Image (tube, rainbow, N blue to C red; front, top):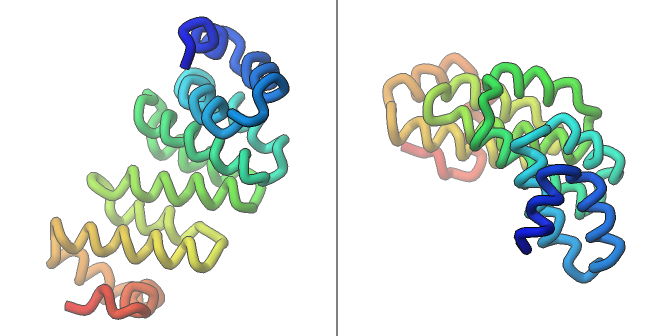
Amino acid sequence: MDPVVLTWADEAPEECLNWCLAKAPDMAETITEQVMQVWGNDAPEDAFTWIIKQKNSPLALRAASAAMGAWLGDSKTELKDINAWITRLPAGPVRDLCFEQLSYALNAAFPVQALTAAQKIHDKQMMNQAVRQNWLEWRKRDPFNARQWLNQNPNVEKIVYSTGEGQE
């Protein structure tokens, strides 16, 4: 991103984003992602206020992905606080995307919490994919505990084995 625009995005991200989208609609996706990476790191709740106003448009989903990625990657906010915040989002594609990204961020250190976050996704296909992927990653690192947890959660076991990928 141009250094002037980057500075503007850091100082007044909503104004910068709205102006850039009006002046360069052909670059909407790129501009939105870049501004949201800054805004999502600096003031994620404000970034998501803008995103929610976009009514689950394709641009809103790209913006949510970039903002959540920045928030989860560089934030000092604890993951449990991000989880609580996501829970308060209105149900829909943006919220599902946020739970999906949170689940992947939690997986390495907190696999059970990752699977819990993945199960909060309302879109069945997205939820199944996130649950399956999180469990398979956990199984690679810790097969005994992953299997033990799965045995105690038959609803998840059905998801994991629904495509045959989880077969041991």
